[in-house]
Length: 344
Image (tube, rainbow, N blue to C red; front, side, top):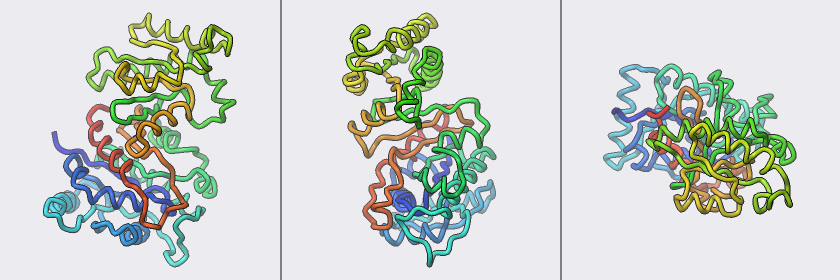
């Protein structure tokens, strides 16, 4: 099978996205598994390349299946093999007054641009030029400043692709984590813990895990309360909502167990007792994965017409433009998108 083309969005221009994308694409490991095409604002990207001292150069393309653009990708792969300056195919989107631009400062302009990058990446994926997408971080506050009312990439991509579902899975090494809910206050997240929703996510998780050639994927459900509620002493959600969902899923042939105390279930999954864990709210799963290996955690979105991956961190305005950002999660996201591009 041909190596997939992965559309890599630059993320919020004011954040570390431009730097980590540039640094990621000077690594031969990335180019061995895919052909990356960056979508972003070229002046800012060029500035980030200089700051990060990345050995790359952005070559403008339109993101279409033309002979010229195929040749640009071919030349990019050749340049990395020769250990020379990597010529990256770059789809330019939007303008910026570089004299007024500042790294580390959220702005309406950059919030709008980060949304435009995603829209363009979706377009070239839907048109068949790219086989998947890897996204650098956007900032929710900057998006709001720009009048973009999405709380994150997942909600944005679900609407832009008109998909019926969009489900997040975190992967770090052999640990996989699905989420019952994501961007809610903790109070509202507790209201999401209902039998019907737990059962729905278990069905979806089982379906996608089977695409990894896991015939009967073993799923564990994390408990909501300490000690899994201790038979109702510390809460009744396990008895009233979670366990009934697990039992119904089991009756449907899904290999699911639990609920297990959240302070141990992720450790067990990391040691391969389970193929995946269902986290019941955002931080429960995020803390587990990032403590396990912060730099190599990758967010994967299933349910779209194409695979989408992302870094597990934010825009890091405090270090943006300083040339010290760590590109590891971005590299892992691009490599994971390439690995999963064929299973959607």
